Amino acid sequence: MSQARSTRSDPRRRVALTVGIAAVVAFVALQWLLSLDGLQPLPPDLWWHELMVENLTGPGVVTAWVPSIVGGTVGMFVIGIGLVGVFIWRRRRWDAANIAIAIAVVVAIGAPTAAVIGRVRPSDSLAEFTPTSFPSGHTAVATTLVVTLGLLLRRWYVWVVGVLWVLWMMWARTYLHAHWLSDVVGGMLEGIAVGTLVWCAVEAIRDRRAERSGEAAPAGP
Image (tube, rainbow, N blue to C red):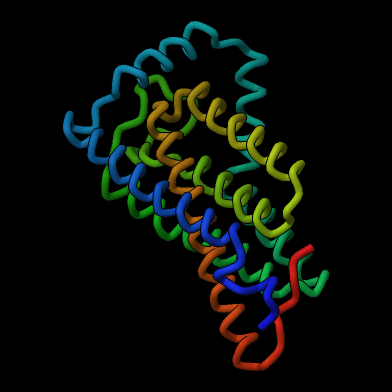
């Protein structure tokens, strides 16, 4: 195996693993904190929600619906399939698999978790009304894709655009009163955990297969 793909010599792998574990711990801690008061909104939730209500405007609602629609179930399915197709076309099958697995995992974790927790959304929601508020699925999927693409493409501008996209999504979901602030923070933590840990797992499997075949796996861009 080439030194470039050695687990011990790849600082990104260690950092990603550490960040992923920290995100899991923070997510569990946030969920525990919410459960202490019966999933009622926290003081920061109420403050942020009031701020969103006070600043609600027609153009703002339209702006908030853009990421909400694009980052919805159909939108993310289309984007996910498109990204997988592009990476396969570029002959980066491992990276295509990484994206597909990350999306599948974040949905498989987030949807059942939200249903089991059953946190009620703000009563004045302009979007969804089902009691699946925590964590925010839109934010979780958006963050997962951003983290995964950032790790795969290794370009600073991917991270910058990605962070802006996640912040826009978090703002939009609370501006539409579809989530409390802690819901989108929980979704962000879920996305960070899934994106980093799935990437670490795929890279580890990639290395082991390369070692068994006696060839170094292809390096990233």
